[in-house]
Length: 180
Image 1 (tube, rainbow, N blue to C red):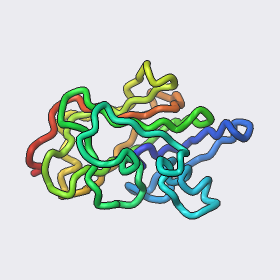
Image 2 (cartoon, one colour):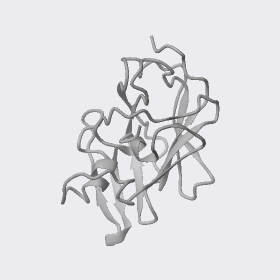
Image 3 (spheres, rainbow, N blue to C red):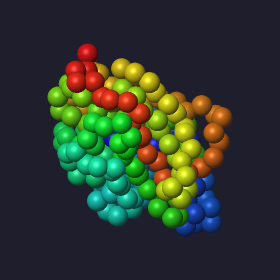
């Protein structure tokens, strides 16, 4: 899941390239970009930004669940995942007026059961939805093995200092049938 795209810098192009600094403290805190968008800069009660039309979500091929579950801030206890296939992905488009320079991201395991945990993936960024840059790669990572809907967060090193409109989690290897 994606409040995943927590970063220090959100460029809001709507208002003369305003910069917003969002400071990560813990997975799915209220400091992430998707929470910021879902509250319109903390000026209203949170609403899922996909359901409100503020961001767009797409999957390579959906296995289970609605696209909006991918960017839901609170744990909705709703299964959401792609088919377990190499090169599957889940993507969020922040929209034409936004870009993000991410320094952290969080994921939530997409099943209520402790099985088929994501282990190998790459977080990628793009400005056109076609050409992708690798931001962070994990291979055989066991962070999302704490049971159904477990969460984890990872820092993104400073080598890629670009801002992006699109972000996706790209599966590079099979999920594990048991998460232990």
